[in-house]
Length: 277
Image 1 (tube, helix red, strand yellow):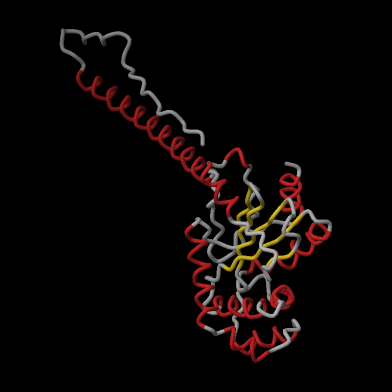
Image 2 (cartoon, rainbow, N blue to C red; image 1 turned 180 degrees about the vertical axis):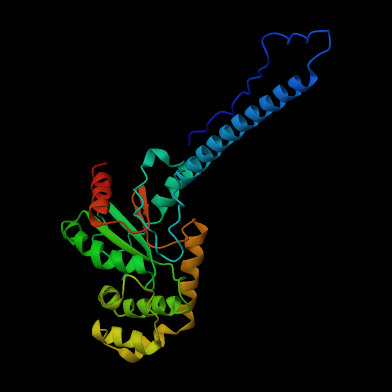
């Protein structure tokens, strides 16, 4: 961050004393007027300088890079956030990014080779409009990178936007228990409106499970509301908050990250850059 140095005030004054009026009496009224005018000019200058410094300060703080940068909690970040380059991150932030991928070959909510050079860890919410936009527009354009072994995607729940967000996350886990997470993921997001926050019920989520080909629906319904599933979603949210992720979507891509929605070109560029390292 570039900090602007504090300005040094310049002290100004008359270059020569004012000559006394004829008769030896000092022109007090004229002197008073001159002082008032001078004070007004100084005040205006100081006000202008203060305004410039305030704008610089606000601009600097908003551009600070951090691995814990937030998308808006509503998931409605107005613009994609450019990927943060690794050199701008602290050792602590890089550690967060590098520790997050699990590369567990048995993770039912991951896709792509566990040995892929790039892991994209996505924190998402089934009720987040920009998560919907990402799933509908960006995600499908990354499939070739998964197919050729470059990319692995790992899902993380950050269920917080609506009262039914946790239930939807629980349903995702229930589908994953039967190996149908990504089919469930695709069915849910395909039906969602990217300009709205969908509301979910046990019945609607069960319907998505059926369309996703979850084989044992009774098991799905039991797993969806099981104490262990509820606890898992709660713990996932606590973990996200602990490492500073408070908004969705949030993408960790090896040694960089993208906070908020980003189009496929932006995400692919970040993946390509990380794969080349």
